[in-house]
Length: 253
Image (cartoon, rainbow, N blue to C red):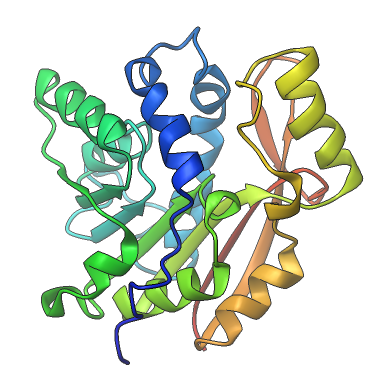
């Protein structure tokens, strides 16, 4: 498979500027990133479940490092909210983001906690252009990222280029529905104000069928779609309801 060209790119520069402005807030659990902190446990659970379902790790392992020695790529890692717990579970993690501020925050936090992660400030297409990374990663995840990219088909092609033949891709994102417009956009940004105004663009939310189609075009079958719904305790749980937040996982057909 030829690496996707980087000329068009998938980076939305307005989003990068927005996240650069929030660089110092990534690890503040009461600040603008609070929703991501609350959402991280269910995202981590879904990633582990997806890896287990593909037989890459055992569900019955008692190891403190159940993800060793998997090579895992975090696309759009931000400040490292998922990369760090994934690395603590034993994975060899490469984490990329186009925001210089986010990568700086991620590196500083990892170094302060003695966690080894290969952080790089680059787009996924740039990583795919490096020959050593062709079919390199057993697991690739992009969590709360695809709704910010400018071209989901190029994004899917890039993941397909980087993914090992027996690997698994995991996406978490927001559905393009009226409930999502109400809760994930208007309520979250303008009423409750738990995320900064302008964080999301409704037209860039991705329906499961669109996600399946984009990955199917590059040979990856998305065979699991699971909803995430809030609980009365301020956490999230997996559900068949995908109207707002959902995860999707798949592998080469």
